[in-house]
Length: 177
Image 1: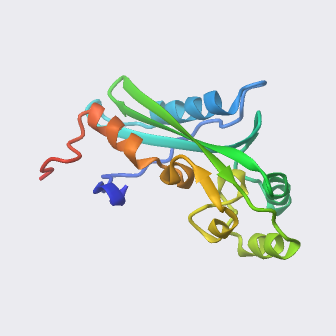
Image 2: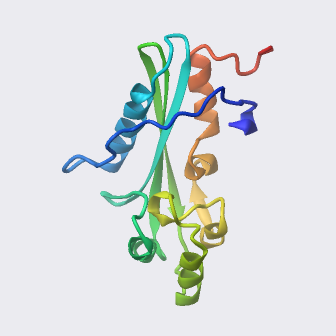
Image 3: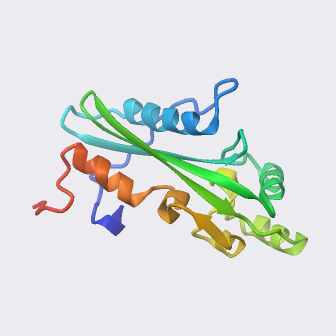
C-alpha cells in the first residue's frame, strides 16, 4: 500500500473460517473470502476497511496456504512445469457498503529440479503463501512468464485497489492532510 502512498491507520486481522465450501470454485471462493474478511473487521461507520485474499488455482483445485513443508512440496510439485491461475480478490468496506474486485493472472512455473525444490523448502519462504510460493521472493526465479497483474500475484493488485478506495471516498490522489 505504501507503493501507492497509503499508510493505514490500523491493521486488524479478521477472524473468519477460510474453509472452501464443498464444490466451490477458486474465483468465487476468493471473492467470498475478501468480502467476509471486510465484513468481519470491527470499524466505525466512516472508516474504510480494505481486505484481500489470494488463492492459487490449478484447474478447479484451490491451493491455499500450505499447512506444512509436506503440503508445500505437494503444491510445488503439482505446479512445477505448468501454468496456473493466481486469483486475488479485494474488498473495500465503508459503513454497510462493500466494493469488490477480483484479478486473475495466469502464471507459468518452470519445471523445478529436486535441488531447487529442496533449497526453496529449506528457505521457509513458502510459509504463509498461497500455493506455497511467493513471486516477490526466492520463487520469483521459478516464474519465467505471467499474463496479468504482477501486484495481483504478490497479493494486492494496486490498480484495482486504488479504484476501489476512490469509489469508497478515499482521497488517493488529493491532499490528504
